[in-house]
Image (tube, rainbow, N blue to C red; front, side, top):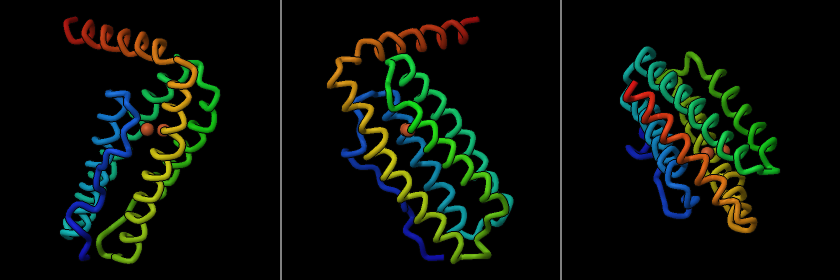
Amino acid sequence: MNLPSRFFVWNESFELGIPSIDADHQGFLELMNNLCSAMDRGEGRNRTQATLDALRAYATYHFIREEDVMGAAGYPGLHAQQVEHAWYLYYLEKLDGLSDADPARARETMEFMRTWFVDHILGTDKRFSQWLTATEGDEAVARHLEAEATSAGLRRSA
Ligand SMILES: [Fe+2]
Ligand SMILES: [Fe+2]
């Protein structure tokens, strides 16, 4: 299909300065690259569907995590985030059956995902980190992440 092997490339401008969210975003980007290369290498419908399912599961996990952080900080832009997240998940739902057998649709899909990712991270997610800095909400976020890490530790040791 002739797509670049790394269709999505991380760059520093994507960083929000919240390490767990930044790590999630990099993972997200890797999964979109996996989907892209599965189609590019013509790995077939099943393999493509598996990468799509993994992307959907990760997106769901990340969006819940991000919305929890925003909720804990009392972020007034939470609803706009939820709308954009829900819309992206709806878009992924519609991709079932995506296949390298239809290169035009595959390319259009990857282009759409790249645009969505860049716009969402640099626009909607960045607005959250800017708001955090302006309102000094960082402490609420730090407390939330600490509690999250503690409960993950408790789950692991249980
Ligand atoms: Fe987001
Ligand atoms: Fe995000």
